[in-house]
Length: 191
Image (cartoon, rainbow, N blue to C red):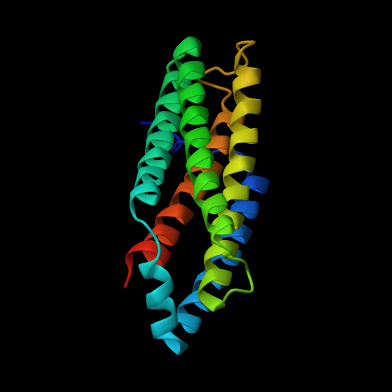
């Protein structure tokens, strides 16, 4: 009796992107630790700053990013089943969710700027602006990556056997989503 070889195990997507994702998670991790330390040192200041934050738009943004991640998973599933058109539609929905996030977050940030809130207002606002703008830029990069994959998908590039770029885009998009969930919980919700 001949034993069959175990299935080949591999990391989905591009290894370089995974290294980049780990580096970005480390940077956000340091940011979150610094935020927690500063919050512990100045609880009244941070409580006052958080008290000025509305939860409506950030909650909607959370739902948008979760919807974008669900759409990205659906795109992966569609491409792995050879359904090109469906995969492209799901990628477009991911972009739509990301665009909605950027619009709402931009609106929120402009509102803070119009109130005179800057990085030098106090430690809470410095962390709030630094974290949310840094994350905002990551969403922009995620949308550029997804848009590039969508453009390549228009030519039927992805098959069930060749989906590295889609997997890479999905890994990055999910990292952006994960970071937002942590940021949302830490900055907006935890009191």
